[in-house]
Figure 1 (cartoon, one colour):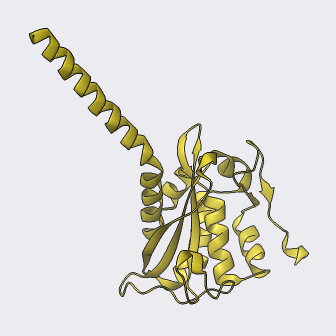
Figure 2 (cartoon, rainbow, N blue to C red):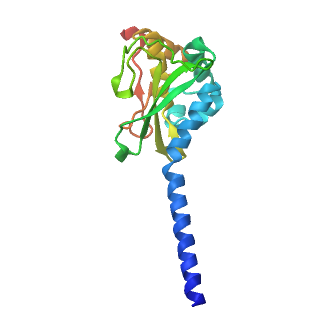
Figure 3 (cartoon, one colour):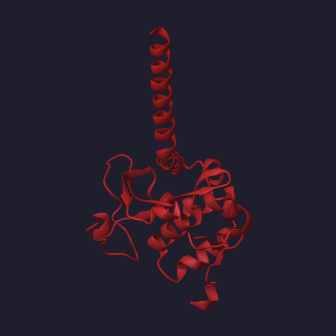
Length: 197
């Protein structure tokens, strides 16, 4: 009888540990996204780069300096700023990528920044008027869950400067390209050059 209770207790403990382990890994992309958003809000470029996809650091020009330049040229215009809304967007999770959108706003009032040179409204994200927002993708890598920083930075610059000026800003900051879920490992998609306006 005692042996049976011990086996049952071990089985219950194993199930609880298994569920806890699954919950921890199932929420890992969300925790990575939250850490990234907090880093952007505090303009912590070191953490932003540490959370970047390794190929972005190696091939696309994501550095502490490039992140600082772009944050200053975009969200820096509305200091103090914060994420006023973070929403989950639909994306093909079969590929392992998770997609959120972030509405940026005034940290004092909590109101969204009513500015966007590219998009007047985006109903799929519940945005009915021009607002500064960016896409945020979290993807699995050999180093754990990482953020697609280049797409995030490109979104910010496009919203603030519009085309074709955005590409000049990105190139001057040192961003050479971006990655997507379709990009082969070790490869990147080059940005259009400012001359190809």
